[in-house]
Image 1 (spheres, rainbow, N blue to C red):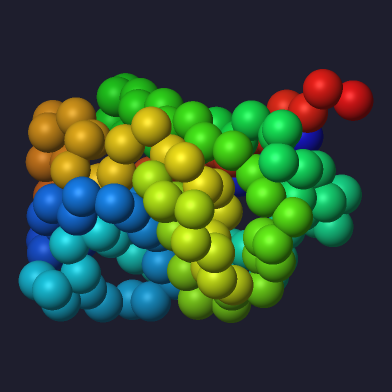
Image 2: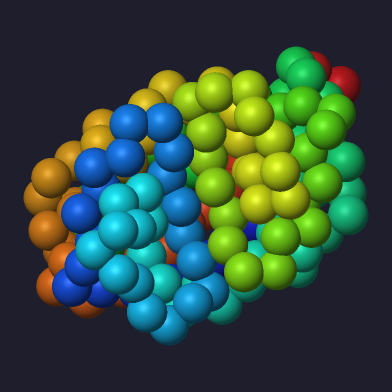
Length: 140
């Protein structure tokens, strides 16, 4: 199962956060948003298919976020959890921790914003388009 989100970079993307990465539907980004990779997302977790959300609520689910920007690709894997609600209507957050809130799309992410390829981040700083594909695999 997968969900696809389209967004774009912004001049204030810094991708320096050590424990999260985020894509937001907001149209702007301040320099303080050091986990945000892209703005103007066309979908948020609240828009995702209920079957996708249910699959992500399995602790054994493997969730992979694939970021495609100007021919560059970055993949981050994490896992699901029963407490994931996918009710966020503004942004989606991948976390290296086990903290959940309505924006959380994965836990135990392999890395956060600071771990993203700097060439990909540079393209986002230049305002490049982003295609984010979220895939969930369960053992069922």
